[in-house]
Amino acid sequence: MRILTRYILAELGKWFLLSLAALTGMFSIILVVDKALDKGLPPGQLLRLMPYILPEALVFAVPVTLLLATTTVYSRVAGSNEVVAIKALGVSPMVILWPTLALSFLFSLGTVVLYDVAVSWGRDGVRRVVVDSVEEIAYGMLRTQRQFSRPGFDINVREVRDDRLIGPTLTLKPRGDTPPTTITAEEAILRTDREHDVLRVILFDGTVMVEGGVTGRFHGREVYEIPLGDPRDVDVASKSPSSLPMRVIPEEILRQQAEIDRYQEELAGQAAYQMLCGDFEGLVSREWRTREKLAHHRRSRLYRLRTEPYRRWSAGFSCLCFVLVGAPMAMRLRNAQPLTSFFLCFIPILLVYYPALMYAVDAAKGGRFPPQAVWTGNAILLLWGAFLIRRVRRY
Image (cartoon, rainbow, N blue to C red; front, side, top):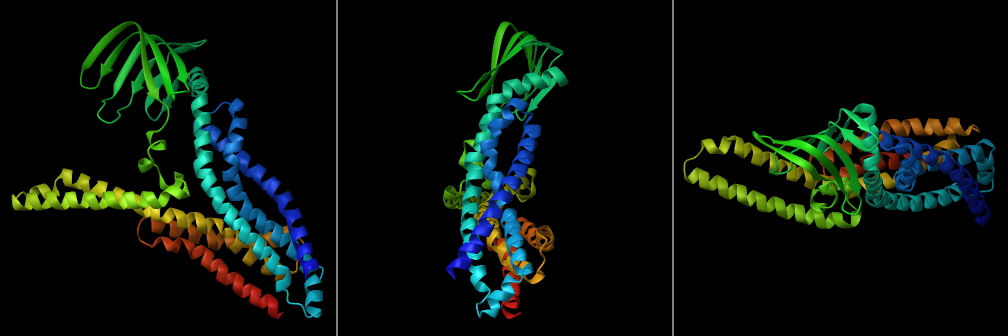
């Protein structure tokens, strides 16, 4: 039995490592190019992105690679009648299935960890690369397109000479209670302060116009600091649940629930006061609609927080579910062509598992389904795999 176990694991490991290298490289290139185009990164920064993109690339590559390796090994084993020989000796085919199932369980746990690394360390690393490159990105776009935009500001110029911006117009978008501000100047220079994550715009001889009619002029040098980091990257309470490490999600769920309870108490008290005063029209005013939208937003974030751990665990354990379907199906197909067996297994999975996962995740995030519904796709594959394994054991 140990000989069969070593034989299967050796074959699986060989094909898995070869396939993983190829698919991870392909996914890494796709993700790096996507990030570079989205953020406008210069070519020189692409290599810096690679280590931070790698966990996310592995998250996509590992389940597919494991399925490819599994179908390759078991289709070859079945195609050369080795399964028939094992059964003729009175040995159950489960002997050659258990090693792969156990290995895929370990890979599932590792993929869950990779999800956590990708959303915490990986995304923070990408953000740092973008911040470090923002000055180079800005000058590149201003030279070619005469404009540079980011969530908090816009810069338009007449032309660029070396590092000097000629005829710049800086538009600062509203932040909190700060109104929009437009600044025009004769010249400007951009400098990045990496220590404080700010872009310094040094303007010379210009005009400041604040929305509302306030206008002022300045002579000489004027410096404006624009934060480059998204405040949501610092404040955990404002972060998207998909960007939070797994360890902080339970605490954030409790904090979000307490915030919702407190806000609902405030709304109930305010509604009771208005009803007592006879201000029934106020209960359907724009202010109350705004409050209801805010309450809905907070509940929506709570649903997403509750769904996120289940989403990561179910996506991670797709490795085990893929193998549960792929291994017995490859044995039943008895096709010595590895890619044929792979696509005959992967296409049904693609048509069943991923739509079920996406629909369940969307419904759970909207509060229509409980978060456990995210496991629906895995449950379908589990039942399908159990049926196939039963057929393999019987034929």
